[in-house]
Length: 446
Ligand code: MV4
Image: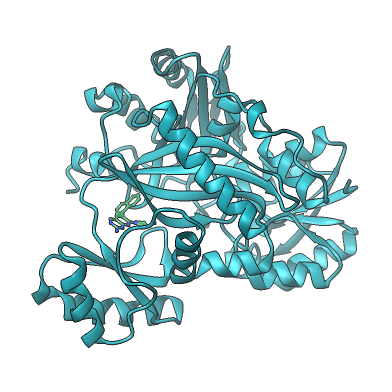
């Protein structure tokens, strides 16, 4: 097992990784920008290295600086966390070339899933259901028009290098295809330096359901059931729950087996998530996330597994410590992503936390780096806390969440706690009857 792990991230996820390492007897190295000197993960880590100024490009995305920190501290392995360099194949290669272990999937798998056209082709080949559309990229306006007639309307044009909601255009009729196609390509070229695009049928009111998996690359692959992440605003998830209220046990067993069989076939190793749109009882693959995800705790809560620990173990060459039949679906879990933003306008609200009291009690977990006196810097993601609750049933979970949100005090800044309190009392949310557009419609954005 590793003796020392460098955590190439910040905020609550850096703290989450630090905690897993400590419990495994692994020393931690924090890296941080000058804006994060007083961050909780920096305080708790065994060693800390300041790697640059606040701007992410010069710090958390600065490959050379991070590798230098790993080198001078003698870290065996690097955990990239989420976002930043976590899905960067080039960085993963550099980490290995410099003699460290990359706690994540192989550069080849990072590259494959980073290209959404390749990812979709791989999914299809491996027996994962995909959205009907172009087989591969669409290289000319003529092809776009010809394919559009086959696919039907509405359809969506997506950038191969996009993802997470960036680089997409919808066409509602044949008259809109040429313009949507050309705009999508031009914008993709500017945003990603890659103008490859593909087309598929546009699904009108799907849910976003994703399957969490962990694989050891030695024939072991286990899924941790699914998460429903349909409650989102501008492609930012707001509330996630596991399991999805839309699936029955037979449906989740079937999709779980489909993805684990595919990942074994692919030789995938590490944690990963297969994202689907789910509409009228059917799953459609959209993307694969080749990293740990922000919402991983709800899967941990219903399965009793430490995903970060398992991810570190498989990176160190161990086989998975459990089999599929060991993973029972126990109860229900919901996560609220608390951000430092105004609960109605979403105006960022960085600043000093003058008062802090986190909720507790049975079935309540708070993954947060906040503390009284901490100043939230204005340079990064606004996520400041994940409130995660677990209950025997969805009903119990909702009551516990209401209770926990009511206890939570974060003084000095605006947070989205009042929004979460409002949302969990909405009839549609209580009944589990929502899709990816529900929140934006409710807030009058659509
Ligand atoms: C779609 C879609 C409808 N039909 N693809 C947005 C993020 C990216 N991962 C894929 N996205 C979508 N792809 C087809 N064929 C609707 C979306 C979409 C969406 C998906 C998941 C969660 C939130 C969303 C919000 C708007 C649009």
